[in-house]
Image (cartoon, rainbow, N blue to C red; front, side):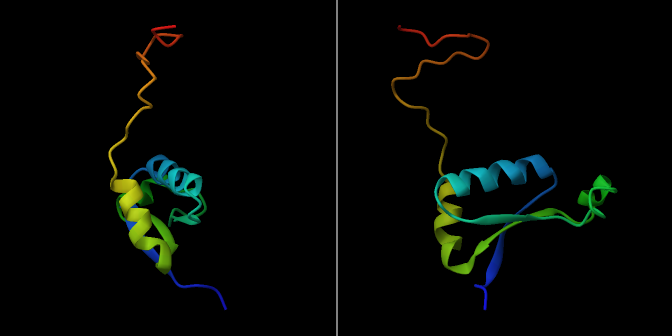
Length: 89
């Protein structure tokens, strides 16, 4: 029998949910995106039924800590948006 899954976040935008899932999977936490949009035929349904992100119940606390952590670039990165190369090289 499979492990219990819990919804940890809801999103209006499917892309945000997919990015969050990718972040969790990069931290080795399996996640699924659940959406009620008639198989993609009615994307406006996200306004009534948000896109949900679910993880195993045992991973839920860690997943929320990861998603709530502030984004920090590597201290050696001096990336400037619109610039093709890092500075300081």
